Length: 276
Image (tube, rainbow, N blue to C red; front, side, top):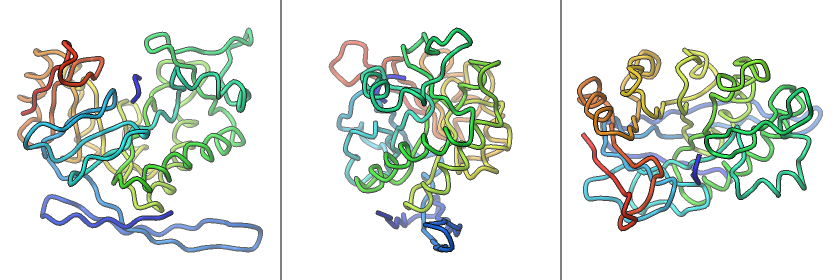
């Protein structure tokens, strides 16, 4: 996808949900630290803007914004931090090859596995050791999101196991999410399930709090998310027809927007934004 310390956040308002969580971290042999942190889910059915391509001043009325982890949050709004947790941003490919080449997925011939739609290398989540090493990196990004003032994180490309069947599995993705979700909570961040209906309830069981779904209206899948997360769903569509379909299906109860597929900024010539 295009690029795309502990803090405590309590957002006022009846639509906001704040959750206190406790879990156990092992700092070293024989040492256990108990951490409880407060985190807040996005307000339900609030006007949303998807800005993972480029940050800009949100349209009037927007209350929730998603931005890339390298961007600054939008002042006064609920901010979601975009993190590519399962694939490699194209501009970061060299860094991964130089520093963590062993964490890049290869096929049976030894070639890198590439998501051709976005020219992104796929991360190798197949073993516990590799998942732990990857989580150490991604959790560092999550800490950076919290330090900047984001209130939630969306780890993208969870569905690599669907798109590269035979190499990756759902069990591996869930095991990896179980390393990311508690860390996000410890940093005071909610964490989203980004896409994929085939997780069913396992994403929520792994600690995910809400969903962000691209094109569930287009494919008639929005109810698969609401069955698990209720109204804690944000929908992004990229065509007029799919946007209208999503608005009709779930727009009365959840956040639905239309953006241009390249997620550009106003003035680009391709910029599109609508909400319902």
